[in-house]
Length: 248
Image (cartoon, rainbow, N blue to C red; front, side, top):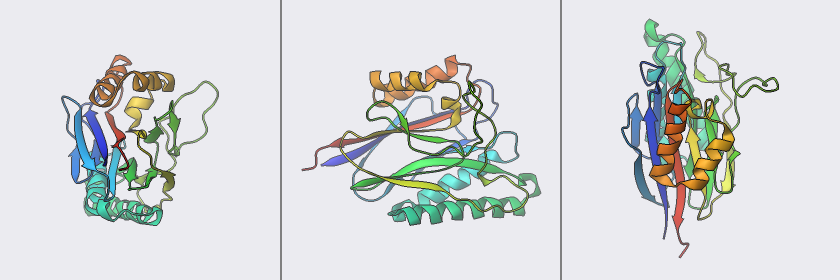
């Protein structure tokens, strides 16, 4: 019997007063809070399992509201996410929900969030994102499988605070074009889903090395520790997805 393990962690980092990140793992959500230790959940492989992070846009009012609203929608619709089209439709619904909530409260005008994650199906994985939070294939080395919505970087620059697409984030409604792709599923597959609080301060080679050296809770802890040692400039939220068991 095959199964899915998900190890997750969310932390404000060292420079931010609040955690504006949110996380969804199946029916479980974590919004604007702190996990003192990595949490590992195990699910049977079968019904669609959504795992995603949402990074409320810093410098905007209500970033934590936008990210929480997004992951709660994903949790509610998660069992129906059985195709690329279904994922795109729900992400567009999330975008509408963020704008609608902002319209109801002037203090939330321009609130927005990124989102990135994966839906694990019995024979495939649907990887998706809007914004610059990332999904990385960590089975053999480390390979980004999400698509950053950000302008091209000049040589030598690793990151930028500018994003070209988000859920919400504007005074007027902007439609989104989510990035969604399908990959075959196999025992031993491993994915890292994370906000840029990890990938901006920690070089990709360092992330790859830590994932080679550690699994599950220890890997999540070491990734968080590396971001903190690099200054912890932003909220840090990550989820490690693993496929275990046998096909019989």
